[in-house]
Length: 564
Image (cartoon, rainbow, N blue to C red; front, side):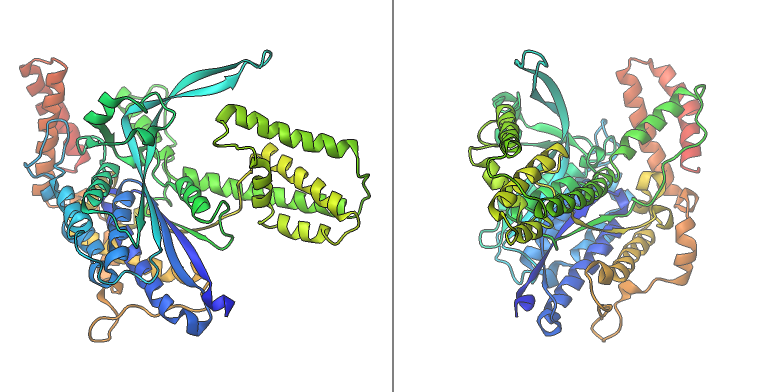
């Protein structure tokens, strides 16, 4: 019966992908269907029920996270189709090039994005939920990455090596997270949903494509910073651009939220699932020369900056899992050694080890303060550590050994020092899974992944590839013994989302900008030429030279880029 009542928690991390948000929408549509379907049969099949309680996202992934939160907490059956509508039907290049809200400091209008957020995230939030998802939690934690154009200053303390005198230096950060708890018994007000919606627009605010998004943040969002009490700045609002610029796959934030939600330690069976349509692709470039053109080097530097945010947290988590595995092996060796040795009750080494642990805590407290490291921190830290494997099992074994009390105490202090020396305090191995795609096999990857906005069939294809991929991978990710049934339509037949035309499979992965309607490409060229004129005017370039540059240099470059 205990197994039947168990709940397996899931944290989702959604990466950015511009028009490849259609792929993510397909993955999410399938995942939401799968969790709801599997929860209905969990008790009969002796499986745990699933609970999706954490979502983090950057750029398009952040927008999708906000949309998914609204779906699962209000009306899964009635709103799940909004993922398809938002990413396939309701957005295209014509609407993005619309003149309304067009600005000389951006290529595209944000009106269509605002309309989507208003309709599917903010709209009708004054009404009661109809039927939330069975996997919706009591509190859904969502966090969206942002890039703050102002920068936030922090004083970082350090000690002068010889005198131990504390000093500090200033650093400025530009990447931040916007966190929203969504409680089932006290859902956000419409005003709060407006804030969530505006933040979703900000995280997807691709630089240059859209003008910066104004958000009103609180001083508490910047605790201990130089701007925490800057009333003038905070009351005027801050400008933000695409959160994926610095944090495209906020896995670290998902782990932090999971640790808090799980009571200090991440539950051992919690799943972290990363959805990323672009992770399986290379940005390597072989032919780079010191004599290359200035423009070529600028383009490469921009690619490097953008590319550095991809898979960063994923690689870090994988490396941390490996370090934890090494630590656990060493801890087992220490435990075995202590179990079979004899120790004096007043051993000098024991007291030195205890003093070292207390010194570590005192040092941390002097840097971060008593709120972070209170008086009982050492005891609480040890209690948390010994709730996890392998420390819990080793402690249980030592409890039955001779000199049990001193051996258990000795091992506890050794474990504390080991974790702090290795930088693994509050760390545990996490279960990572990926639903990704080689973006070179998707239709919308051209033009820095804006290509899907030029053709609805391409977005449909990428969406269906997302559903197909998720259906194939989820049984293994969720630990199922067999595949779950596909969704059916009103006639009992397999849903159309699973059917991909063979000619699409053969042709769409190799489409290029040459396959785009020429009128659309010319409209984009016209917009870029118009904005380039504004930039040159800001640089003080005379009108005649602007015209010459546009007609004989920029237009030529654009024709090559856009295949015109």
